[in-house]
Length: 161
Image 1 (cartoon, rainbow, N blue to C red):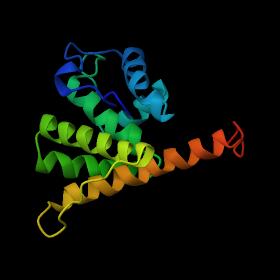
Image 2 (image 1 turned 60 degrees about the horizontal axis):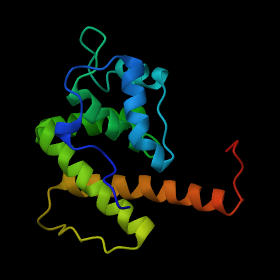
Image 3 (image 1 turned 180 degrees about the horizontal axis):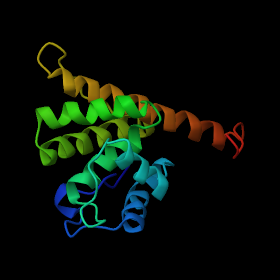
Image 4 (image 1 turned 180 degrees about the vertical axis):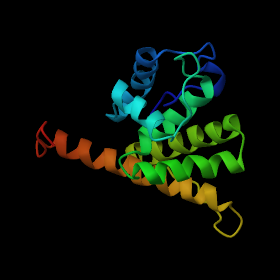
């Protein structure tokens, strides 16, 4: 893909977005991957304590970063697994560092799956286990998007699936 998939960390609004604004913002970036989030899904992530409650009903830049990850990977992980993955990230890296790495990995994987570019290998002996986990989670997610898109384009998958 020619453009970046997700916005840079500093491009994500830091003024706080209300629920509807947050879902619209996320969907603007996720739509090219045929992924959609609803207001009720966002509220459920808060209710299930996957992310913290918005302050004064506004979602922060950090929460939006987590919501990009959660929304993208929810098809390959349960809510409990997502909660563990977010907690694992929070104990390893600052949000900005983790988000920037996630964003870069997502771009590499999407380019690999949809454009046929080479995916730089991770040295499993040296790479942090969280980075290997993240790469594999992104691969699973993007391959799932690819399969659905391929079948839709081949008219083999109906809109009801």
